Image 1 (tube, rainbow, N blue to C red):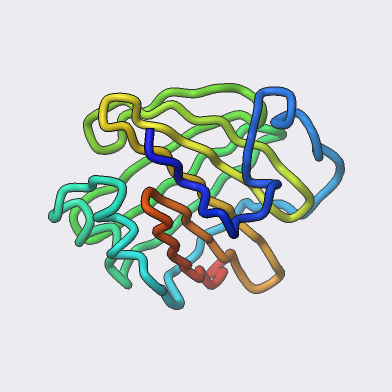
Image 2: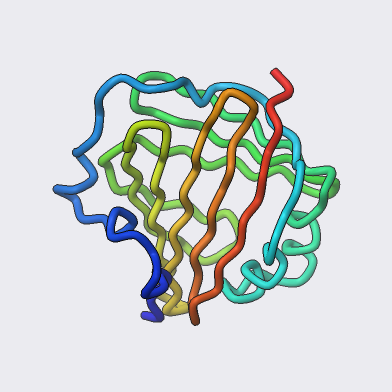
Length: 160
């Protein structure tokens, strides 16, 4: 598989099942609705992870809305764009499989303070990626690390 974590990525982004159980203390609640406030390199990242152009265009839309529901260690992330809605669900420290764009993708997430580190891999396409959600009082910064050292950032402003 092509490695998603660039050599400059923090070691904290490399996840193992044991590491996924670390950092589960008290932290901020991610629950809320967020709107896109800015992006850097996001369309290039979507291409690098093999997303079809129509799906990439919808996900890259500045009209996209992200809704996160947190219930204990279980998270539901609903991304609503102009043409489609994608729902991802995961529980910290537990492997999950989803097929948001066709091929099944395996993932695992862990939490470290105000961050969620989500590592995913598409074995059929040989692609791995890491997404880091960083929450603050005003919203969420998402950092994306894809194949061939592709890096993107996206800022979401809290609506509710």
